[in-house]
Image 1 (cartoon, rainbow, N blue to C red):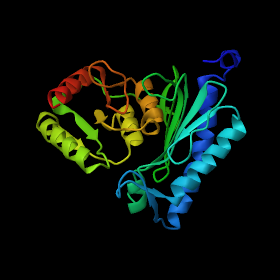
Image 2 (cartoon, helix red, strand yellow):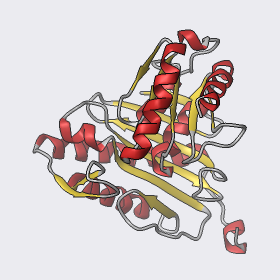
Image 3 (tube, rainbow, N blue to C red):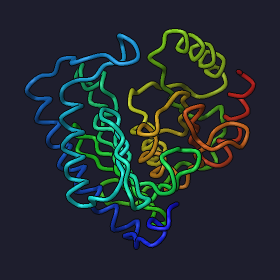
Length: 275
């Protein structure tokens, strides 16, 4: 942290959450209206199945404008545009549409994800201060601030507790890389007989919020980007879930696992045993 950053007086996590909530609401309405007018693929990224739409780009541009109007000196890390280096020590981590394939196909599981972190833009070392995940098709908004708990539509939520692994409903996701998907499929096949069932919903941010809300018992995925997990990870933690990696590591692109305390350890052991 620079001397300038150390001297900056930051808003509280609750104040940052209100800014994020307002921006997410506007972005959700914008993206939902654009979806009603039809969507097509604008480009591909890492593989032919890793797509981006014009709505992704336009939604992120809107979010960036609103962030800079409210917090002109903060940094921004987004999925679709270049990183903006700030001077305050605060960074906004933005996924304009998490679940782009669902968005393209009209599956109602996609979201706007906006978080504010301090200290770093690396999930291994940042401190998440505030986060909002909005599902425009259902109207549900998940929100959390550091130490302030987690909510869905303003009502407190809590992750499920004391769920044994063989009764756990677990979600996961798969890479755009065919080679990594093959390995993820092998791990899923090994895990599946040991749990209640497995789900693949298509939006990591909403998966993490579903753990927070008790709609899922756990979620794991390898290969998530910072913007996939920033807001949802905070919502899950503030709802009482453990969010981390394997072997005591923090949640990073290597692995994100979210579950209630006892279940977390059981699933971590199963995933480590599966390689």
